[in-house]
Image (cartoon, rainbow, N blue to C red; front, side, top):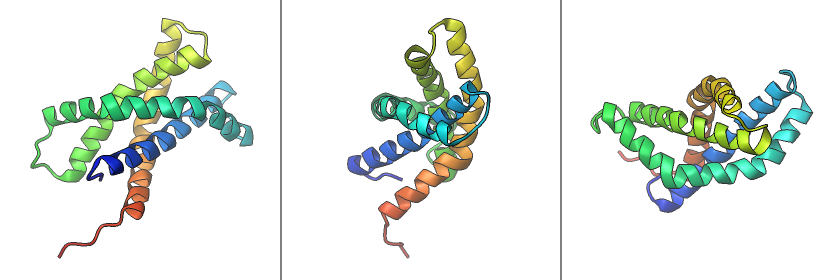
Length: 153
């Protein structure tokens, strides 16, 4: 995990890009009848240009701090580090999903309260599963490969 601000910026940027791209692919597939094709992945790149920087700024400056505070309401610093990581990841999803769903609704759909709630409801289960089982482990692997640390004995 990140040990300084530079590493935190890199980790957050990679996480935002991978998470946002996966969620956009999912939403484009939903909007095109549930089919995934080459068009789905290409259309997702178009939206990624707008959504990834928004997600990065939100997560880096606001959400990660708030999620850490929320996670430590139920976790103790002495708990296993992997469980702390899971708790923070879940808290980030719980904050980012409604916010990013609102932004996507305003930018790419006909904005209304009902459309936002529907978008949020459709995205939340996917966001949690994608973060916990695919995106989170994948980004942590990439991060470990980029920032190799000497093994302490």
